[in-house]
Length: 100
Image (cartoon, rainbow, N blue to C red):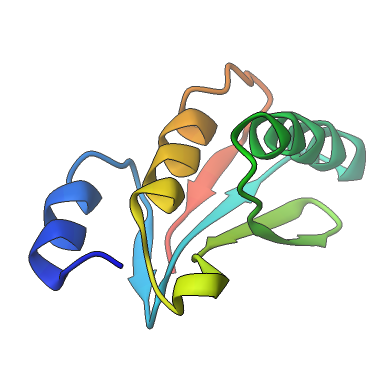
């Protein structure tokens, strides 16, 4: 599990992710459900490749990703690696990132 200092240092490297309790969270907004689902499928490919899976909530055109390492009961480097790869998704239909 990462220390608070390590988490703070890694958060700087992410775009628009927020720290909530023992998770990092990011919300995305799309034009419609299909675009949201297509994005989630790309996230799924990253998760399968890295063997580390986010909690995903889809609410029509909104997607919330939440990352934590359940087995460690907190944040690890794995969470930040997945978040960084999600941020690299080339997805022109993202309308905007929503900050909490």
